[in-house]
Image (cartoon, rainbow, N blue to C red; front, top):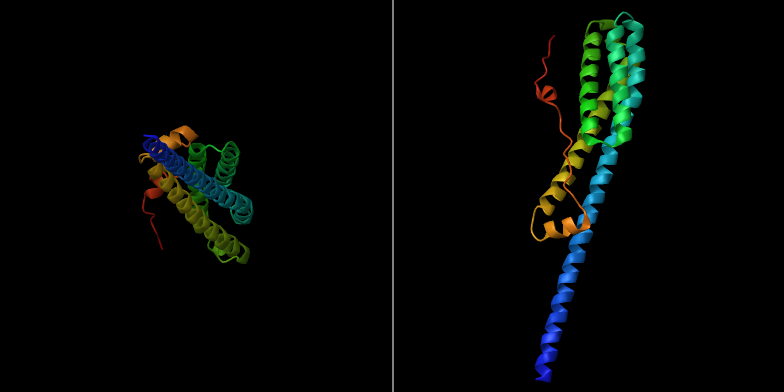
Length: 191
């Protein structure tokens, strides 16, 4: 009888150790996923800031050629300012909205560029445009990495028993960085 009690106690202790190990492993995995999202979001912000820093140079270059297009320049400056403010708030939805507004303003700026053929041949403009294009590619990659890490975490915390551990540890689902409907439209190319 004493031997049976020790066996039962041993099995209970092993079960508790196994459950604790599973809990700790899952908790650590969730923390790693959460930190990965934070890191990937920092890269998105880094690339948005890089673009924000390039835009004034691009605007000043275009201003020299198109001084009468002041409304376009004002829109770009205002949109850029909104994005900077949103990035300081760390509000993903506000950043998305501000980014969409800036993309729209940049599109209007590039339409101005189309009206000035000599501007398109200017070396400083070409260099800035290349930098901006490279930055846009970096933003796309950073946004994809961020969304992939959000998908991984959101998928994990929807599964049982990880959902229980996520609720206990305060890990919540994250929002994706999405583009607006206007950005999904196919651009028109005119020659």
